[in-house]
Image 1 (spheres, each protein chain N blue to C red):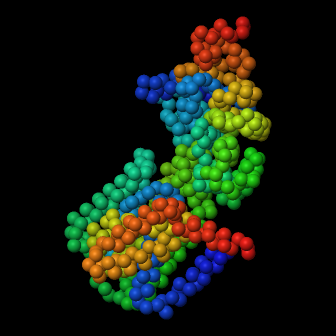
Image 2 (cartoon, rainbow over the protein chains, first blue to last red):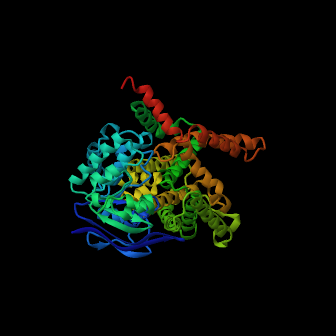
Image 3 (cartoon, each protein chain N blue to C red):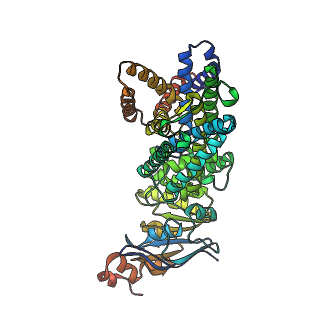
Length: 245
Length: 321
């Protein structure tokens, strides 16, 4: 059954059609990778889905109900959480308090929420840093805090916007493993990712955007060799480099 | 931390006993410390914790002051009830300015300007309304009747101001540990990230504004019946808003003890410098001292005095505890 269903989603910024007539589905239990060159409209699509931007046209259904026009916090309450491409932890709060903010949505009692936040912090390997201010963390740790905060809202679907960007290969590999564990615990995932190794190993299905439109979709291996995808990333003159199909 | 707690307890126990040993000038000074500590704490809710820099809190104080004074003088309604009417009206005003600011996403400087405009509108309205005394102001004749919030003994004001400050501080300490307080801090740190984490930022900013303006409006009653005269240019003036804001900023905005520490630092400074400078014919020179102090705080103690103080005491007691 489809968890997230977007139909005909469009968004224009002045003369730029950032997202054009986009259809996007995420099934329950699925990991979908959203890829495409810079400026393809991936983050705009995320902002539309999570309620940070209003769509010019189209429909978004999450768990069977329309979420169009809902504010981000209401969409979060329905079980759709996101991270930001440029991490935004609360710098002058501790790691635990950062995650606590997410946990308070489901657990209004601060003591309960703190216990839940603590569990998420430990699960993401941040236990030793729980009382550290977020401002004093490394990028890899801040990415984990952001992920922990989103996870603490107990989402059914997690939207991850380039969580691997800026990480070294060791950190990225560890994060891929963590995301695998999160998925195994029953959270569906839609991820924007430029790190091909990560997106290939995590995703069940890839959706490729270019100039706001969906140009290809399918299993990772097939999509990677799709002429449209090679054209989008490398330009038309490289299409012949694709292996024969 | 233990030393700090012990110090706080000692001060709390000692404060109620002080007036019996103080001279009357010291009682006045401490009354002002407590009252401005209370006002700073009220501002701290929306300005310090939620990070919404209101620079027009005088408007809430003024509305509370005029409401309680008018109800008392014109209708004979005791200010002990009138103060809540004043607080409620201030909260209505807070709701209006909060809605305008938060619904239309005014942040930073724009929110500052909106709140300043609000207090200026109040000042001009009060100054041109004859029913409230116009520009000449509104005067309360002294009867010394405690039922009308009037006291022969200045120590009564001391205790009321102390109660207001302690009550507001206890409320803020309680809220700080709860969902409300955590959400306000999250909003101050990053509104978009708060929304993404499930915080209804509009709702919580509105609640912070309502609580802050209500408390400030309560303070208006004390102001009116401590001074017995209300001038629009003073009660709704920008200098009063600055007086309200500067203590929590110097002491540590967004901390429960910041406004109290800030008031203990600044209120005596304000009073003494006002006293001595005006004796020498230098009216307003205390504002220069204020400005210099504010620049020093921003440069050397950007998070305020209290967090630094707490850390220093913690470090000193660390080896023994």
